[in-house]
Length: 93
Image (tube, rainbow, N blue to C red):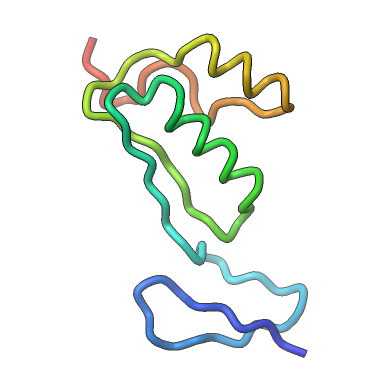
C-alpha cells in the first residue's frame, strides 16, 4: 500500500511507500503579525509540533520585537518552546 502525497506548487501526486518520507515539506506556512512577539511564534511552535515534517513553517513581523515572556511561559506549560528566542536576525536594534 502506498500513501499519495502532493508536492507544493505541483499538479502531480507522488506515491510514497509506507515508512518513507519525502525530503521536503508538503506545505510551506508563514505566520505574519506586527511584532512577532507572541501569537505568530506560538502558532509556529504549535504547527511544528502538531504538523511534523509535513510543514515547513516560520513566523515573521513587520516591526520585530523581543519574545513576550507570557508566550514563552504559555508554551512551556504544554512542553513546547519558541522556535527562536529574542529578535530575529533581521530585527533592528
